[in-house]
Structures are given as structure tokens and as C-alpha cells.
Image 1: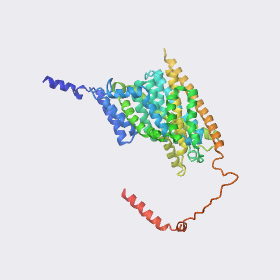
Image 2: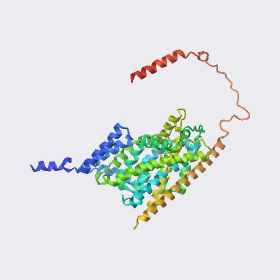
Image 3: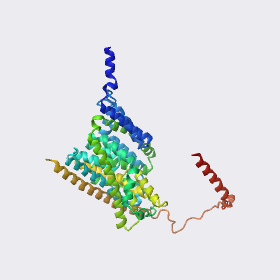
Image 4: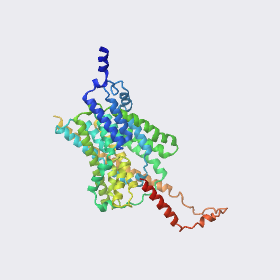
Length: 377
Length: 93
């Protein structure tokens, strides 16, 4: 009889706390969104499953010694996984559209306003005593507005490891929701005639320019903002491997097998942060709301900047490409393209929107570097 | 009483951060444009036929006869075949 009782005490059912049960449901919800609704499945499947695993009572997968905790310590706490992903992203990025029209970098800069506006929002929430965020927390939440998963995780792991789970989930969910969040804002801020503006065909960019650009960017980062060097350094390295065309084997590995491998472990490790005591908190709600605000403000400021450049620069810039200044490559550029086609079925903005899109990646990495520099150092 | 300073710090970080992002990307625009300008200058002569002309070809390959004579206006059958295919594909859904 005693053995039976002991066995019962060891079952998950006996040990389960309501919080854990709820988190397992949330993990399942993420899996449902990923599998049925196709929301960033590459990340939400591992994250959701990791979340379920982390909350199995008694198994302790996410506690010290557990395998998920190990993934977390090795990959995220050290900052390695987001950086490796960034290298892969670099190897997949084509700077051609950006080089053809360098002015689009300004759009990538303007869209980062969402990050800093949200930071103010988070600080204001603590000021009025609604929530309790430190400056570091606020900075990590703001970076959700950069719409860049690896950057958010990197910054959160450096500045606010406690909030990492919520920040990563919010960041990736909003990236999946880009086609829903952005269009209303873009329509509200532009007129029909502005949406119809045709952009001139881009000039051809030579191979040499593409090889030199990552090196140039690296030097600029090295001179001005060493705190952004981990992110942008890996990004430039990946891009150089692709463009120099003499290490195709390495470049292919980086773009495919390596980034996929790391994504699996990154997802599981982020999922391990979805433990009940950390996630079921009012701050998570705050992060989700602030993240949405960050995203919307970023989109809006990008569009406004594009309108401004169109006015000052003598026309020729369709304001719709401004929204692509939040990174979310290539989803945001596709949204710009789609809205352009709605107004004029012959107006293809995709390549024009790729410029601000990759500029947004650079911009949010620079913003991340500033946050880490200011708050951490 | 550190809440007011938190707001101040936030404002500081916002102004400093946004300013720096713009400065950085402006510099990047300048440097990139300069780089492109230089490279376009260097590469200007690539692909341009030199003044002394190109050496004339020594052999002459005639174009394929039947290919050149293919009727270009007979699109009717092609269109009807394509229409049927599209129709079949749509009705399958």
C-alpha cells in the first residue's frame, strides 16, 4: 500500500500546480498557432514544445541540471545562439537593394523610434506604479519594436534574463502578425495618390560593392559602437561569406544546416523560460501590450519618415516602403508590396522595400548596441 | 525616491539612442555612397568596347534555318490549349 502511495506521489497529476497546468495549456496554444495558423512555425513549434517540457511537474527539465536548462546556459545565457542565428541571417541577406538606394537607410533608422518610444512607455508604467520595470527591463521590452527575434533575445539575455521568455514569445508572435498589424496603420497614414507613387527601377549593383559593404559596415561599427559589434559583426561575417563567393560551402552551411540546428535549440531554450512562476505575472501582460505599441509606433514612424523624404527629396518615394523599416525580413517588405499592388496592380514595391527592410536589421542592431552600452555599461 | 530619475534616464536614453541611430546610419549612407561612387568610377571601363575596336570573328556560324522560319502568328491553337488547361485546373479545386 505504501508503495502505491509513493507511486501516486510521484505522478505528474499529484505534483502539478495550477500554474504548471496553465503553462502547459499555453505551450499547447503556441503549438496550435504554429501548426494550424502557420504563425512563425519554425520558432513557435520548438518554443511551444519547450514550454510544455519545462512545465512537466517533477521532471525538472528547466531546472539546474535539466537538459533544457543546459541548452539555455550554453546557448542563450552566453549569447551564442542569437549571434549564430544572426550570422545565418547575414548569409541570407542581399544588400543589393540597399546599395542601389542608400537613402533607404534613413527609413530603417526612423522605424527604430518604436523601440525608444516603448522604452519610455515602460518607464512611464513603472513611474505611475502600474508595473515594476527597471531601466534595463524597459530597454529589453522596447527592443521588441525592432521586430527582430535574435536581437530581442540577445538584448533580453543581457539586460533582463527574467523576462526573456515573455519577450521572445511576444517578439516572435508579433513578427508573425506583421501582415495584420501593419496594413491599417499604413493605410491610415498615406493617401491613395501616395500609395500609387511609382518608384524608378533600381540601378544594378556591382559585385565589388556587395563585397565591400559588409566590411565597411564592420569598420564603422568597430569605430563607433563596439557594443553592437557582436551582433553586426556576425551579421557582416555571414554576409561576406555569401557575397565573396569563394566559400560557398561555408555560406551554405550557415544559411541552412547551422541556422536550423541552432533554431531548434534556441526555441527549446526559450521555451524553458516559460515556467509558471516567471510567465504568469502581470508583467507578461505589460510586455505583450508594450510590444504591440512598439511595433505600431515603429511602423508609423517609418511611414512618416518615408512621406517626409518624399516631400523633401522631390518625390519618387512611395511611403508604403517606410513600414518595412522595422526589420521582420522579408515579411514587412511583402506587406509593403501587397498594399502597393492593392492601389495599383502594376506597382511592384518588393525590391524597393527590401532596402529599408535590411536597413531595419542594421538599425535595430545599432539600437540594441546602444541599449547594452547605456544600461549595461 | 528614485522614480523621477528613472523617467529622466528613460528620456536620456531615448534622445541619445535615437540620435545615435540616426548619426550612425547617416554616416553609413555617406560612406556607402562614396564607396559606390568610387567603384562605379573604377568599373566604368568594364564592358566598354575599346577604341581600337574588337578583332573580327574568323568563322561564321549560320543561324538554324527551320528555327528562323517558325510561324510567329499561329497562336490560336496555343491559346485554346492553354485555356482548356487553365479551365481544367480551376475546375479541379
